[in-house]
Length: 209
Image: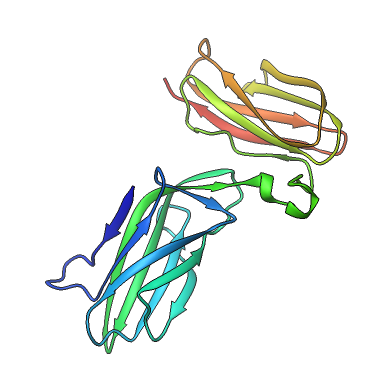
């Protein structure tokens, strides 16, 4: 739905912004429209994204003079799904700088669009972060295969014991998704291990019951 924010601790905001989020999820590579309402005298807006809960902010764009509508590119963090992301606008008027923030939301890194010139095939083997994570009791495991190959995907617990074989055999080129249900598993940390002819990829996931 819509998310909007005003600067806190002020009787009057300098800039208010509204973003259109579908189910609080943004997709990369893609862009998002930000609508703004300004007080008089605002000379500049600076736009930031955080993909780690607000610990670090990356400048996405600067607009001076200010605009009522700005289109921003969505950042592309490495995991397929990155939760606890935030967007921020800092409005400048003389010595006053107001900060407005919205979030949290999730960024979905669409790996199927990695190589659109090649029919959407991934450029290399990849194992995306499972989603949701933490999960209970099922989660989706997505992986990419650039060409027909032998692929093995297994799940291990932290002691190194194999819990399940999720996939074993030839996989066609493309991005694939498998739903893994661990209803009989205990709460804890697990490892997804993807083995191909070229590399071994590992992701951590957490089951919380």
